[in-house]
Length: 213
Ligand SMILES: N[C@@H](CCC(=O)N[C@@H](CS)C(=O)NCC(=O)O)C(=O)O
Image (cartoon, rainbow, N blue to C red; front, side):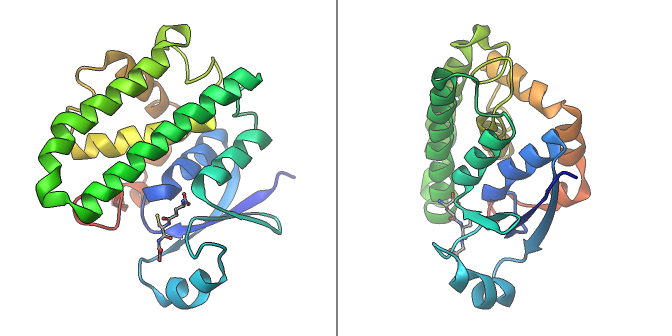
């Protein structure tokens, strides 16, 4: 029987979202514990026990991992979502690191500099990065497949969640990026992803722990 993974994260999309999308799209069995932000379950019980005092947390049986990108890579290796050559794996890593950069930037915006930063972020940062992602896609099969090949990778789920978060912030974010838009729609329409996206639990979750996003 296939393993049931265990996953613990806040009741947010945040850094848990790409992992959830991967589980759902790949039909992997998982049980999630969703912890309310600020709950004693987090502050008193879980946090002090974790390597970096942060979530998400993932268990494959007794084997525990934290660090969202590490968890994605682990699942990528285990489930064939990490390319089929060293070059493909390198390209997947490169794009995933580019996703991390924008994720950190958007968190910095909503947590630290919303009032003074929003306009610049929407006018400059979002088009710049959507362009970066579109160019990365175009390098492989003219952007008609996934990040590194015809096969989806863990980084596709991660790039999907970061693009999706930016569409919430700026619904026109993809208007000038047809290749990225088509890639986004291809992923959004995969049955496992589509069903998860429209689920009540997903709809209810904010991207971050702020009122802005
Ligand atoms: N580099 C880590 C960052 C993890 C992180 O920042 N976790 C946040 C939630 S997204 C957290 O646990 N915050 C609660 C706290 O620090 O008390 C990762 O990618 O998992």
